[in-house]
Structure formats: C-alpha cells, structure tokens
Length: 498
Image (tube, rainbow, N blue to C red; front, top):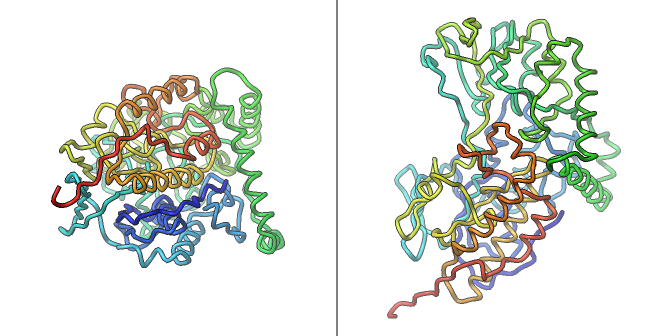
C-alpha cells in the first residue's frame, strides 16, 4: 500500500533522525518527498541498513515476501527470490540511500547516549563527547535491535566461543565442532539448517515449541523479473495481492474458532507430517498453546534439519554453563566447543541505550518503568517534538512492518505540518488522549490470541501487551491518515523580548 505523503511542509524545522535502518530511511525519504530537506540522520555504524547490516548469520532472511518487504514507492523488480536473503535486502537499502541522497545527509559513527529538551529544543549527546541540536527528534531505532542474552550461571567460565546470532563470528569455522544453539525461534530456524551439515554435533536447546509453517520459498525466473521491470504496474498488482493475502491471515489471531485457524492448523499438521518421520520428535516440536500466541515462524528446512543424525533437540531447561558445555536440569552435561545464542532482542529498548529527558526533567526511562505506551504508537506525553517509528504497540504478527513505518512517517509529517501552520513550536500528546488511546487498544487486545496465556516477548512482566497492534494494517493506515490536533497540546512560540 502506498501511503507516501503528498503534504508540503510550510516551514522547515531542524529534524534529527536517529538511525539509518528502514525506519530512519523512510522518514528521510518521505521528508524529501514532502519538500523538506532540513534534517540530519545520526547513525552509530559506518553504513545504512540497521538490522540487515548487523545480522549476517548463515541463512539470515526475511519472513515477509520481498516485493512487500520494501518501500511502496521504491519497488524492486529484480528480487531474486520470494524471500530474499539478508544481504540482498541490505543491498536494496544501500541503493535506496544512494538514489535519495541519504549518504550526504547522514553522520556516521554517531552513537546517541542522551537527548534532553530544554523547553525550546532538543540537545543530542553522543558517546564521543560531541552534541547537536534539533527542533524535532524522530527515533528510527525500531523495536528490536539490542541483542538479548539470558544471564546463565557460569557463562564466564566457558572455554569455547560464545556469541549472539546478531554478532556472528565469521572468523570462526564451525566445521567439525560441537555446537550448541540456545533458542528455537526466528533466527535459530534459519541458522540451524545452514550449519547442521558441517558441524560434528549440534544441540538445539528448545524452551518452547513454535508454530512453524512451510515457507514455500523459490527463486524468481529471469523472465518474471524482466516482466516486472518492463511493466511496473504488474509488480504493484503483485505486491497488492501479497498484501491482501497476508491481511487475510489476521483473523487467525482472533480468539475463538474460525476458518483461518482451522486452515493454518491443517497446514502445520501437513508440514510436520511430511517433514518429520520420528513420532517423538514430532511431539517435541508441536506447541501446546494457541496459534499466534507467540510469533509464527516459517521454514522449509528446519524440521528436516532436526532429523539429522548429528542433531539433538534438547527440551531439558538449562541450569548453567560450565567450562566444557551446558548443564541441563536433568543433570546432563552437553559438551560444546561453541555456543550460539539465538535468543532474540530486547523489545523497545530505546530507553536502555538512550536516555530521553523531557523539559520537566523526567526521563522516558522512568515513565516507562511500569508501563510502556505511546500515543498512536509514535509519541509520549511530556516529550514534545519527539516521535518514535515502530514504537510501542506497532508490531505485527501477520504482515509487513514497512507498511506500518510508512503510515507512521506520514502521520508524523502531518503533525509537523499542523504544528508549523498553527504558529506553535512544540507539540505533544495530551495525557487524556494518550490514556484513551491506550485503554481502547488494550481492550481490543483482550480479544486477540496474544492474551491466550502463553509467555512471550509480546508481554511485559504484568502480562500487558506493549508490542503488537490490535487490528489489521489497513485499519492502522486508515487511523493514521490524518492527525487530529485535539489529541495534542501545542505550546506557542516564544519570541525574543516577550
């Protein structure tokens, strides 16, 4: 869906964009499309790309079809596969950055540690001791970028190499080694089939079974890529079809019985039956919670990899890590030369890496200590002119987050335009509007399967869902189309001498 804004900013505030991943790039591109060039991107690394720059583990790929997991206004007719590898997505992002002149607008090697509002502007402090200022700050850091590694007892005593999938050791040859992969979710099911044929032995430590469906990946033939290039409107139709099919799947996340739930259960049953012959292994990988309560995964080769003679799926919980391996609750020591943590990321950890301090002196870190929330998923009361892309409750379980990002960017640009047209200088959600939005969202979430009783990273310590949106992408795009100023507090511009 193309939600690119056609608005033109009437004034040019100085905008700081944090991060040069999909979110930050979308903000920059759509600002340029709206007529504003007064922005700077601050990126901690030396290249654009975000998660697709950082994650280079074997088998890394997207679980959304490539023609949909791309900017609606920058179609790529040359995707090589239905689900492209991470390196191809990264190349696409670099081409987009080059085409839209984002390299010239980006300051690389700038790690933000704190942003502080003085009542008029934001001051941005970097870890190298320098700082910058901006009227508006937009966080493009996303919800998942800081690796999460459980605090296992004795991990410091392990004699071998231990690393997270997001920090893959390409200098380390796993051939002939005993490898332990801790985790069996999104990154694990991509890594395991890639490394299993080469290692001496592979232990997969599974805490919870996941719903894994066939991916049905395939390479696009040359003639089809040429067809999409010569007839772009057909590529857009193809993208729209993919979007609609994935939107149709949303009903599987609603509580109660429905056709989609029955269909996906049949798909899982057929996938496991045709991929695994061992009844005991089938039992181990069959979830005991509702479909969608945790993230749904897709792979064509994960289940077959688990049946290899050199692979064991370990269900016994880990009690600690020792010099030569991993000790389980059953008292068994599973020896390993290498430990790979496929343990995911810290959700919405922006306040862990960056201290966001409003004009009152209050930190967003403190505000979110008990409840993480954002008005319309992009803003927080008490923090004027500060916006988040892929902020709280903007995640999805069924479709492409690129559509969410584009809608959020469109909304933020609309807010900035309304702010400048009003003659005010600051804008923030009113506490009442923010509470009303969150109450409505949480009420809707109670009707979804995510409230089905299983533990997942979707929920906080109190069982409150602060990561996922409660409705379809079409619903989100419609609700974010036009900002309503009655939901916000505007602070008039204070001129010198007043």
